[in-house]
Length: 611
Image (cartoon, rainbow, N blue to C red; front, side, top):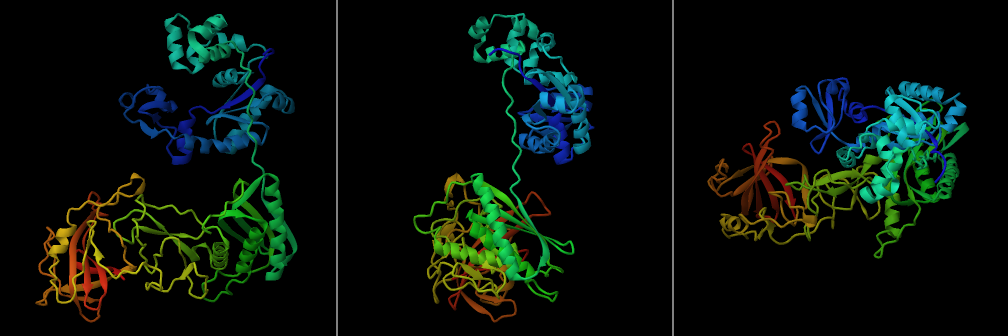
């Protein structure tokens, strides 16, 4: 390729990994700071360099040179996130910015040089604007090609057109950024880029291969790679203003449909579809309202219009200040409405499930639950996500309907046939729970009404109660022995099965089937033996006597006809403030009920109920 490389302006922020750690994590960059990757220093602050810390040093050696050194782990994601405002500030002055790496970005120098009065004036203007907008110090270099501009930026130079080969000739071979090649060249007596560029190109290819040939072109100032400019994200939001404030539901429905069609047309024209929609409204009195809607499929124009209408209906039909489940109604009508496609993906269509999981009934239930959220808020409808944990209550996390279903604790998938325990509060996997009993929902939703499960919610059990060791022991019938020794022998010491995906179960995790009801707050109880004495558990898990009677709260005594346990759970023993030690029992009562009991600090508690 003939001709000189394009003139390039490159902005460089020195020690960017250190600055990113200060911006994101609050690490003071004015002190001795070093960023480490694979136990070696990849960046350090000016104060650390003054103490003798250099790139490539091992952690121990760097700390030996500077005992006060603050060590930060290298995080490329953190560096990229922190650099985004700098790139945005550069884009406010010039177009066609290419991010070379976090901490450096390049742009063709021809446009800014003409528009801002010359290359040097453009460099000064960009440095000043970045400093004022982002409070970040930077340097600019201008040369022929990105490689030479990057080296010029480190010196803060503007290389004259055509002077790039001369500028590069005096630099050491380490400037190529290829440590292995630089070491080999020095052993061969080639110490500067000028010496390397003087070698015949054919000999370089034969001796050093393709990467060496590319480095040879860079050393000679023949960097002809065009800039890969970053396209600024398109503004996909739509906004509508209204001279007459909207305070009626019918007017809101009309406004919602027109704005939804406008948003959908804009997305479709770019081959995009919306999965998460932000709805913003401003009232005549300046009150700002905001709500985000999620959808596990693709939002069509009708679906967008429905959600906007439901949300406006929920806002305009809010409570009038009296105590109620609904949020307060706006004090004035809506004068501006804005739709923000917060989550967009390429429009590739939605595949309907083979067994109807994306069918009409599921869509109808989703619309009903979404409408309840629009009226009562996102937290009004929740669904359960299974995760890790030793007790049934720990294994379930409630998330708002439509949010990402990610567990907070790692853990195995539910065992075959295992139901998710409900806490009055903890629903079955995949079902939704409406927190207001005043809104009837379709068959997929379960109205929250305390801790009593609805018919068909949980897997009914008429068989034995499970043991924590992974076995299932028969619950003794009336008249049988209630010593529990056989049950302990069956389940003791048996390893639990491994979960799916190679993730082992939590030690002490109750096996399937799970209890049908997990109480939101455990109920205090007392357990007595046949002589009427309280049953106590020693530190070595020895039971003072076989349990015979159970009293829950101030209720009537119930006869225990079968029991199994104890199974200890000793959690976070290494943190005294968070340590928790308890033992669990499964008991069967004379009336046919089966309970999960726990003993903690000498107090008996009812944690869950089996069907």
